[in-house]
Length: 291
Figure (cartoon, rainbow, N blue to C red):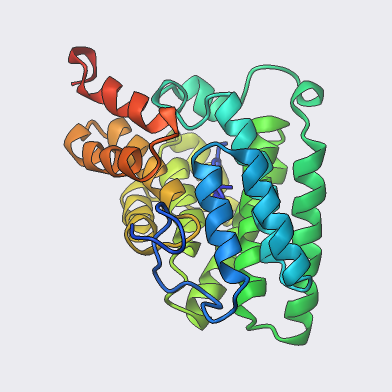
């Protein structure tokens, strides 16, 4: 996602609140707020973060029926498939995120075993829909947000799921460019900082020789900048705000700053009580071994 979002949301990168009709998602600068179909996205993302993927997709499909030209419906559907796979395989956990071998080496199993056709189909369709909007208007905010999400999520997928790091890095660079364009058009679209922050942070964690190689390819990393960008998405994002919070909490744990991670995990546990992941991570952090 990453990007679940980010954009689940970009993980190499190496690899991904108030209420708005529901109890989970914040209402920060919610796009198309006057549209009666807009709450369907909020409800769907709330269900997604509660790990109710079937109901999440039902909401996203209803939104697609109401707004057939809006690529965010398909991007949200793609996020639900990727987030579900990440949840099933423990990607958004300290056990995975704090282990360099896992974070930088990808999931266990072969690419064929991990291949997710439903995600790829929805993500590619979201990208094509976004490009059609941007062909008409290069500054279309919905198109830029959907394209940032689509490229960020497929970057996560390429590196973590099917273990194609070069392809993933190319999409990372695209997602960063699109996120920058989106923020220039609409500075309130803070979800864009998920892609920017995750890529800056995780690439900044790589060994120096790998960062030097990426530098020549025009891909840079900065751990401190990445954390600041993820913090902006965690504070002011909308659809991807919870995803930014869990990424930021895990980054704080990597940086040996448990006191910064704890309130984020506590917020997520309160906002999404049906999701055992957040409560489990908070319990681990508060256990004697986690301090």
